[in-house]
Image (cartoon, rainbow, N blue to C red; front, top):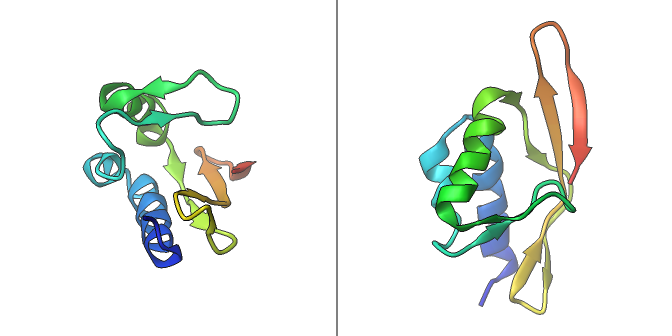
Length: 100
């Protein structure tokens, strides 16, 4: 069962790890058979290998500053939902990419 406190810890770790380009910590948050869809509507990444490839092609190549913008919402105590701001910085620019 997912508690709000556990969801909070996972969200904080997700944001910090992705922002720091810490692939191993970021991937440790996913089950081996996890699915990952980012952004919503994009092709679904299935399994750790595909999720890792997503990281390598995205977060691993950008300077990101992810941070939580609202407390986690735990739906049915099974599936946490989160809202984070994604700030991508390219050389000479800073732009908000998405609210997730």
